[in-house]
Length: 117
Length: 110
Image (cartoon, rainbow over all chains, first blue to last red; front, side, top):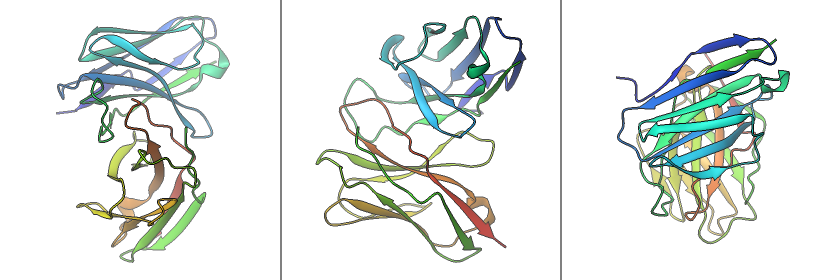
């Protein structure tokens, strides 16, 4: 069974479109994350939710809106897509967030490669 | 956020040990040292973590300098499957996030 899954794996779309990426984890974790990995392979956190509550919101354009319908799912919706949004987006989850814990191994999904034309 | 410095790339022969260095001279007393790796076309995966003492697990060993300003990830016998980008990350236990650096791309030669 896949621990953290993302759909779709590949997404090719035109500038200006709106798209969503879905993420699901079956690990029973409380916390989920979205990361962006750009063409230079630099991996940067975007958002994090703990039990459906936003706890990390890095400097990301407000065209990006995460939504967590339940603690097993964290979806990423992107409005008015731009060329610079082309990247690989990774979802991750970890067990504990509310209690400060340095040992908080994150499990990553396989990534969604978004290409904006 | 404390920063880490790693070599951009390293090479190793198959079945030989590999020592991947990481400098973190601005580490604070509460920062944990984490290592993740990213295999080609996959998401990152956890390797090991530690605070002050050296650590071993089934994947690797982590050697931490006495002053904690540097650490070394040790792969005891590199295999072709270990070819990946290895990230050294400092994590304050009071935060929820990892700050990934540029990592070290490890190439394993058959």
